[in-house]
Image (cartoon, rainbow, N blue to C red; front, side, top):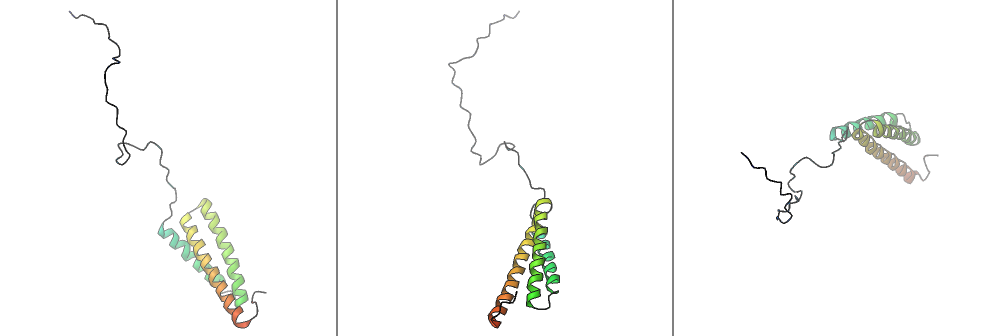
Length: 129
């Protein structure tokens, strides 16, 4: 026969060890916050393909020019179209390709500006008007 003993209740005088708070150096479980990942991460291949496409685009439009003035204006026009495409790619597509397009377009505009500056310096006449 068992004798039922009443539950003594919580022991408020007992000393319990304080739980250690981990430092975070060695995580002991899954992260407490969710981890968000980019659906289209920027990769080197994407940047290179965008740069190659923009270089070809600027080359095709630059070849339409017959002199410095038309070359410069065709390059500005092609660059504006390329940057509009890069903005669309940033919003809806691959940001790596958009980065390559933007970098090469800026470089193409720099080359066109240098050509205009050299022509202006050698002839003394502003070539764009």
